[in-house]
Length: 260
Image (cartoon, rainbow, N blue to C red; front, side):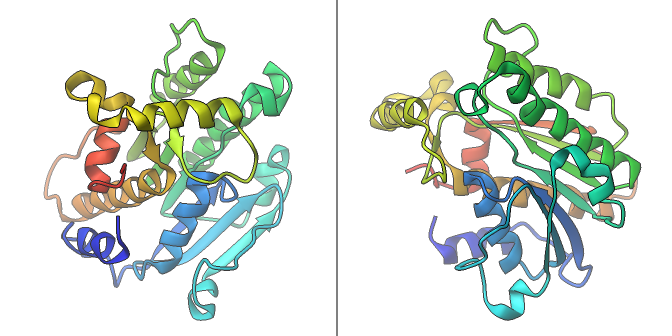
């Protein structure tokens, strides 16, 4: 999606929050989706402050103008010490784009820590500090009944999120991701290349299997968050379901043709 198209889509969502100055917390800002989301949040005038929790320094070059970057605070800390690192932090919206692979993590235990324990700890932080929204990336096929460890861990996280008392929980389940990563993932890159070649054959029920750009997922996360909070502030009675799932085809619909 071109920048002006993204801006029109944002304005077209009937948001009335520009004067509200939402605050946000993002974990996973050095990854494919997280970096794209950080850039979009920085450019968004509806966001007054962005706290980034990262295990390593975050390169800010190319993410915004100096005046925009002034609203970003980066906390570099071990995610094992998340509670202490976030002791003075509060945010309206909490975004989690953490994720790895077993090959990179080396062991199942290390993978589970990154893809289950840390995201759940972040969700518990959101609940404890009365955040209005928790948004997280899991994966297509996430299920506790899956035969695959990767998908099963993601499903276990989703199962725990249902138990939390957060006004809005949004779970994004993308297919294979397109975009440049900071670390090499040959298997995923090959799968995305094959999937992209079959894009136009994937219609109807197969549409959710199309590869999708990381920046499209980021845009959908941001837009869905504003839609949820905007609806919450304008609703006179009742509220939407506490948890919403966004499979890859729904993400693409939100992002408006960003899956090229």
